[in-house]
Length: 429
Image (cartoon, rainbow, N blue to C red; front, side, top):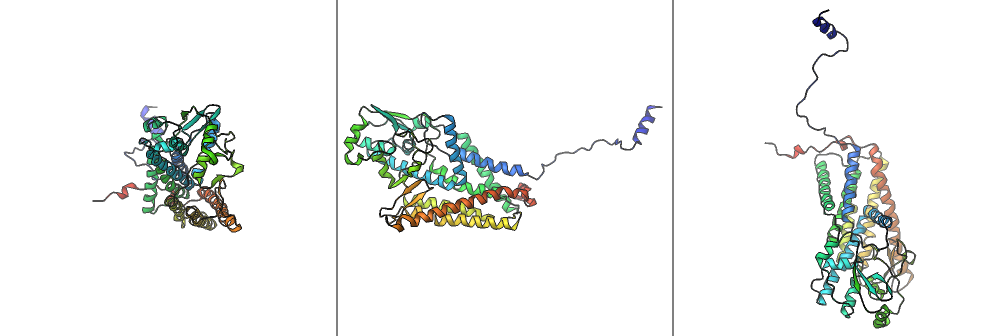
């Protein structure tokens, strides 16, 4: 059989396609995103923001890798679950650093800056005296020792401190880019009538206090590992004798408690938690992350309260979200209302506590306690009960929101997976 005849016969066989393959020119990407894309983008924002915003105090020299990692993990969990509390700590530390800068300049140390104050309150200076274990001293102790002439002016410069800092500028820049991109996307989705998922709304709410925290910690050195050493030729016993009556009470954390504790204005850790988190050694080998003398002023407490209320209020934007069931929608509404109410009512207590007339016992995170000066039953229990109830309700509301965020992925509106049509925002001529 001739070759032409063979070709003709093949063309007539069933299932044999002799047409040339289809060809296409320039083709746009699919205008869709997947569930993992949504989850990954939000988790990435949370991760890089937490990584960039957390400014831990210096570890003890004996702290190993795993102990430091566990500590950082605890604080990362706090940053995600209760970011407004991280803002509170940042504001208190900023307040303390600002006071330090003003006090040291009164002594003539003109080069002492807010960076020095942050560094000192983070455990950046360790005092070594004859016959006593080394221990960190904060900015209040440094001011006291300088004012009585027992230490010389410290020569470390602002640039020296920043050289010790291991701030990850790339991570901070990347966090800013990711944050802006998420905000722009959510605004664009709302403008085009596309569904925003609960996890995206949660992430946007998280950014409100996180941005505030970043501002207040902007001058705090990050990830410093080695402190500066102050070597004294006098003994601790001599200092305590010189201090007189104020130093007769046995110390709880370090021999400088007689200087540092009064600044806390009555705040103290619960006795059961004095040794928690690697704080077994006395004197302390490091300054814990939540040691933030002094408490915030009225304006600063008010600012934290406003940030907390805004953070809670952002969740209300999901009031009409299309949840898989009506019950889940009601749970979201109830949880977000409770969250907002707790921030408005319970969050106002720290603001009121800055007033001179406020004389009630209450606690912060069940860790820090301030007792009433007049120990009547009402003063000891009224606000403390309100705060305790607020914490419990807050935790329950948070847990419900966390569960709702992830179970909603089993049934989202179809347009939740549509990408923003960016060309629609271009002007048409």
